[in-house]
Length: 321
Ligand SMILES: NC(=O)c1ccc[n+]([C@@H]2O[C@H](COP(=O)([O-])OP(=O)(O)OC[C@H]3O[C@@H](n4cnc5c(N)ncnc54)[C@H](OP(=O)(O)O)[C@@H]3O)[C@@H](O)[C@H]2O)c1
Image (cartoon, rainbow, N blue to C red; front, side, top):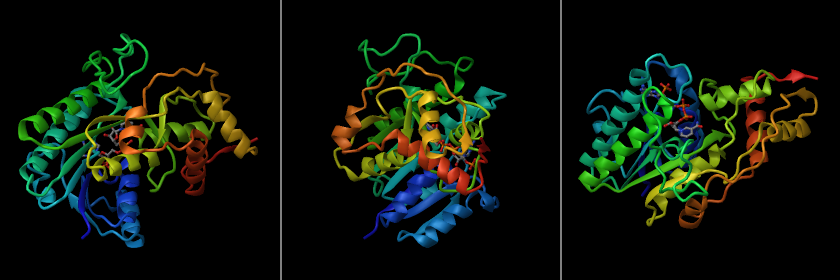
């Protein structure tokens, strides 16, 4: 019998890839969306539901409304909580980032805890933002590992990192109190092919700017969205999965390297020359590879496939040389 998985924030960039992989594997997927009236936000999901073997249903749920996820979690086998704001325009960090991240996580994980009779595991999409410490560096003095917790960010200093750290702490606190099986996936900056036609995810905005030769503001710690999708699926399919999983390339990747890869593949277009930063190993990414058997895609495939999908879908228009 097919397993039933809830995916919160199913419309998002990462969640769409996760929904695609789950449907491809035959899961019944219950995707939550903020507002069922906003069809343009989820029509790509319906297309996936029609094309792939699994069955997709969509459910309205609000991160800030207590009890909002109780109905959708009922009878589910797994709950994936991906919904959380990853936005650059922030007016009020408490309202725009921390409240939806922390209260949303509380509402979703508590909903799962109420359904422990069926829910076997909860996977929360946390972030490397909840791990990294720019000032202090890694606790072991060399590479960031799952043992590291970001204790430097605050509401007024790197509020996105703060929102993800506080949300993950909340998830672990509830899981401990309720005896819930929880795993977190902690990705670095996510890039890779786009399934839907939305262009408002931060990952897409920054890469689109790069392709359109408008900016090169790309974080050097990176990972492919398909690897993140697979890490989530493995987190429920590998029975021994436990704790946090940093999912990332171990070394930094420079914007000069992205430019070289794209210029080789698309010689007709002009890209930013980028910056030639030295390659630095910053992350110990061995846990997810050893424990979940995840093999990472090469970054060249990430850049080429992301550029190809953005151009094909008309989301990005590159500049001819
Ligand atoms: N992209 C990255 O580089 C990256 C790296 C590490 C971790 N993450 C984490 O991965 C998750 C997904 O990120 P993403 O890049 O896929 O972002 P995204 O495309 O912007 O998706 C975010 C999702 O969260 C939902 N959401 C945001 N604010 C909400 C609110 N206040 N109430 C209800 N729903 C809300 C969005 O719903 P709407 O469709 O209605 O807007 C959307 O479905 C997040 O938890 C993020 O922190 C992302």
